[in-house]
Amino acid sequence: MARGSAVAWAALGPLLWGCALGLQGGMLYPQESPSRECKELDGLWSFRADFSDNRRRGFEEQWYRRPLWESGPTVDMPVPSSFNDISQDWRLRHFVGWVWYEREVILPERWTQDLRTRVVLRIGSAHSYAIVWVNGVDTLEHEGGYLPFEADISNLVQVGPLPSRLRITIAINNTLTPTTLPPGTIQYLTDTSKYPKGYFVQNTYFDFFNYAGLQRSVLLYTTPTTYIDDITVTTSVEQDSGLVNYQISVKGSNLFKLEIRGKGFDWPLLVKDFNLLRWLGANAFRTSHYPYAEEVMQMCDRYGIVVIDECPGVGLALPQFFNNVSLHHHMQVMEEVVRRDKNHPAVVMWSVANEPASHLESAGYYLKMVIAHTKSLDPSRPVTFVSNSNYAADKGAPYVDVICLNSYYSWYHDYGHLELIQLQLATQFENWYKKYQKPIIQSEYGAETIAGFHQDPPLMFTEEYQKSLLEQYHLGLDQKRRKYVVGELIWNFADFMTEQSPTRVLGNKKGIFTRQRQPKSAAFLLRERYWKIANETRYPHSVAKSQCLENSLFT
Ligand code: GCB
Image 1: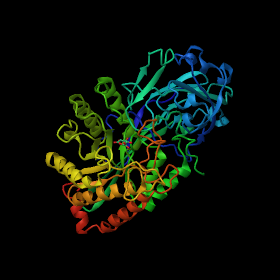
Image 2: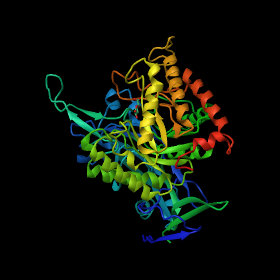
Image 3: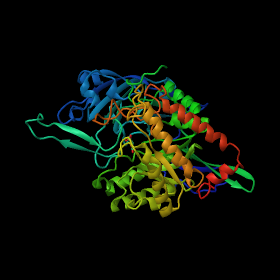
Image 4: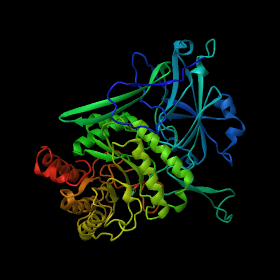
């Protein structure tokens, strides 16, 4: 079937901005309209993990050629969800390698018969490498979790009389390598007195559990054969008028189920989180440490929450992770992030990485290149990465627009000595500002806290300690807030799952809310603070606000 491939740019507003140079094609969020229909494929899929020694039996036996149940037993797997938390089989929780998902769909007859209709298969995210077959035909591959990808499958479904039943098979590999984002390493443990033959573990260099699977929605949608492929919205100001410009690319002529969904997308949880943000009076967050679901970004637009949009550049901790293959992939990931999120007014800044080993020369070059590339994709927004390096050693800071700093005074060192926080924080800010004269955001600070643990005077892990630690930080932040510190982001909004280690008690407990979204004492402290600051800066001409923006890029 012939399909037009020409790309026509319809400029429907003044084009003031030549962005999106490197963005290949669009990735619009699928929405129903008079010309587009959607069919969600969320629900139960058939699933099998490939437990074979080399994890490649699925490819050797070509499991995609026939219904999955024909090649062996399958289990039910909900989509969206992380496969790790669903099963009672402990091997699945820590499984590393290929897993197979399959789902059969019956298509509306019009989709298969009307040659003026394009049928698109869209996968919200598959962590981390995915291969997709439609009716056994290799259709699509994608590297990197947390971002959507899609394929026009019209030619597979519009093939004569009624193959209206479609079999979608998706193989996903969650192995992290030195060139994935985030990176990781596989370590074979060869001491046969301790480990069975072939035993290996996945090493990661970040602090969250490497949940995997189809964690966001999968859907089919249609467009006409001539369709809008992309929209780019930009804004500017001319004299006293605000201008909204847009460029359109036309192609062709319920209840919480935490613990059991890993980090599978969940509407009730999302709405609850935004209600909590509103309750807190918070107005910003960072998508640490990977892009969040598109529905989250839409909620930010609606609720007026500004976002530092971070890519999965986390765990770049070893020198070997700063290589050319990774650099190329990292740039490509930034293209996908910008392509997906560029039109969200909520996005105020791109973050290309969290805590890379930025004291290394090779990291300096790498960050310089990724930041420059991101700026060429979107010259309208500032770009940063989040640092935990020493100000004098950091090789990436010269290239960022805003310095973002993570520090854990009186937590990872000087245990219990809350009295040191103000001094250490002031030193941190003064050193960085003196060297770079750039606006600074405190992008992480906090303390591990087990809800219900109490001790006064405060001891580590109690609610009192978390509260007191935050109070000390706030005193320090307030000293600089009206000068050059332009933001503060608590670590963390809610408790979350991590790998097991002696420093983590059923995950990271630095949340001010539990994983079930119940407040710890610190939540009330922050609520008071955020609303107080919001009220102080409510009036645009107040002294407080103009001082707060002094020296900032945003003036
Ligand atoms: C950090 C990391 C974050 C961790 C946090 C912690 O600096 O950016 O991923 O979870 O510290 O709690 O240690």
